[in-house]
Every structure is written in C-alpha cells, then in structure tokens.
Amino acid sequence: MSEAREAIRAFILGRNPGLAPDAITGRTSLVTSDALDSIGVLDLMMDLGERFGFEIEEDAFALAHFESIDALAAYAAAKRDRA
Image (cartoon, rainbow, N blue to C red; front, side, top):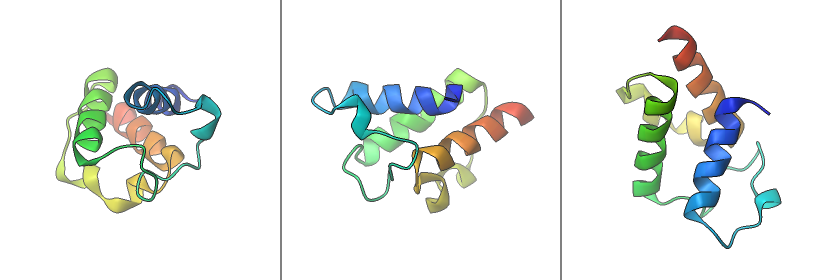
C-alpha cells in the first residue's frame, strides 16, 4: 500500500473511531461516503501537504481528487514528487 494511501486511511480512521478498518479501501469515495465532512477534508489536505512537503493550491480541491482514496493518494504522491 502506498505511503499516501495509508496516510489517508489512517487520517479517516482517526476521525471515525467506530469505523472498521476494512471498510476504508482504495476505492472508498470521499465524495459519497460520510468518512469526512468539509472541515475534515480541509484538515486532511493540510495534513497531506505537511507530511509530503507540498503547498495546498487551488487545484487540490478538484472533485476528481476525492472520487476515491486511490485518486487522492495519486494526487498527493505526484505533488510530493514535484516538491
């Protein structure tokens, strides 16, 4: 599992202590699931930026990045590689 995907899963599970870990997979949508509210999404993006050393820019909040944990992990990894 990629470092970014594991960081996202850990963040979500930390915000949802009653959620079973196997309920959060790479295909879990951050758009349609109730895993995070809007403040949670902001906190997650700030956490990823700090963890992987990239600045949060306007494009970070494109809906496509939140279609799945894998999509957001790919975005974070690409930003990290360019940082």
